Image 1: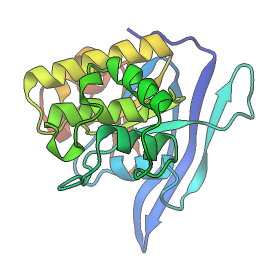
Image 2: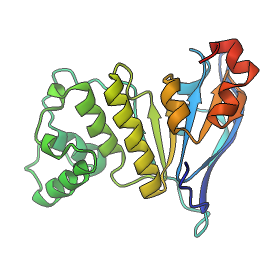
Image 3: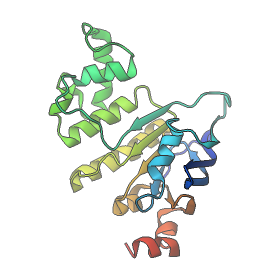
Image 4: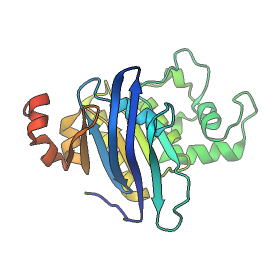
Length: 239
């Protein structure tokens, strides 16, 4: 299933995080290869979103994240991120405004840059969202917003794409389209993708690797290996 080129790898080495006396992440180490989808699963409070925050540099932690590239081992990793929720209620911003502010560091109140407008529109086309470029983000449906956020997170295409349950609440058809598009992206652009998900049917179908967390890595492997493990069955039963 994976289209990994084998030339690059994100190494998560011994990541730990404590809040007061509570251990939230306990010595987590993972290898995330390009062209592959790694899905994080676990019960609520297992540390999934906290691990993502550590990878994004949002919290202080011990351990390190190292990006290895065959041609340049000193290259700084470029990360794209799609959060579970984004507060856009009553926002006057258009999709163009949001993309320019996130990706081009331009104030949203400036006159449109025609060149940038065309660049963004062309990229949105990869996600079937080019017609939304001048729409207000507050008026987008859940599926439209998800496609727009995926597009923005991949301008330019990152070394690692992090997705924190971006399709919660989406219907079955929307979820299938999402996972199918992720499969295409990782193969077309050799993307390394980390996804937090509770949609086990889609994880079985699309994941290259599954990592089950409970503050530490309690099981990892192919979907079949993890879903047939005793620790998975004890936590989630048979799926």
